Picture (cartoon, rainbow, N blue to C red):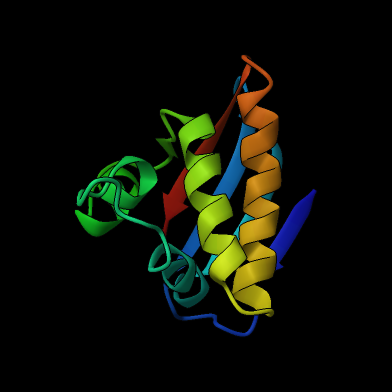
Length: 120
């Protein structure tokens, strides 16, 4: 599965969310940073703090520091993204979130898989 939510936004920042098994990319999603940001802005705080993937997004760490960045806890990210996708209006940001959830679900159930984020 390779999906594209970036075409038409060439010249703007791009992110790639990938499911990796070892050194191989099993599936990838290209996304315009605007769609990515819309979804990230819907992530909740936990007891007044950013946690998990929301923490990395709001503190400009993770994929901003190292590329590709490995999501250290796909299971936690699934919970956060389900919350965000449920609150996202229909359209490309929601479709991207649903595609990302499928990658995270797969990684959470396969100990040989990880989800990575790359920022261009």
